[in-house]
Image 1 (tube, one colour):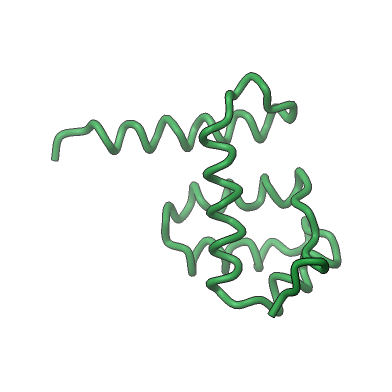
Image 2 (cartoon, rainbow, N blue to C red; image 1 turned 180 degrees about the vertical axis):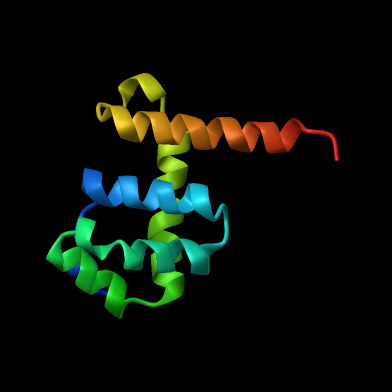
Amino acid sequence: MIQKRNVPKFNNNEIIVVLRAYLAHPSSWPNVIAEVRRNGTMLGERTKVMYASSTLRQMRERISTKIHALMTRNPDTIVNEQIGYLSCFITDRQDQLKFSPN
C-alpha cells in the first residue's frame, strides 16, 4: 500500500505509457495497469516500485484521475507534443463513442 508522501509525481514518460495503455485497453483498468507494469523500463525506479507494490484500486485511481485531468484540460496548454496528441486522440475517440448510433 502506498503512503501519500512516498507517491512519485507523474513525469512525461509515465503519462505517455499510461495514455498508450489506455488507448490499447479503454476503461479496462486491469489491462491498462498490466500494460503500464509491462512497460516498466520507461518508468523511474520509484514509479516501478509503486506500480509493483500498489493495489489495482490504488493504481486505477491514480491513472483515471490523471487521464481525466488531461481530457478536461485545454489541449493548447499541454507542453509535451506527444502527450497533447495522445490526450486529444482519446478525447476524440470518446466523443465519437458517445455520439455514434448503436
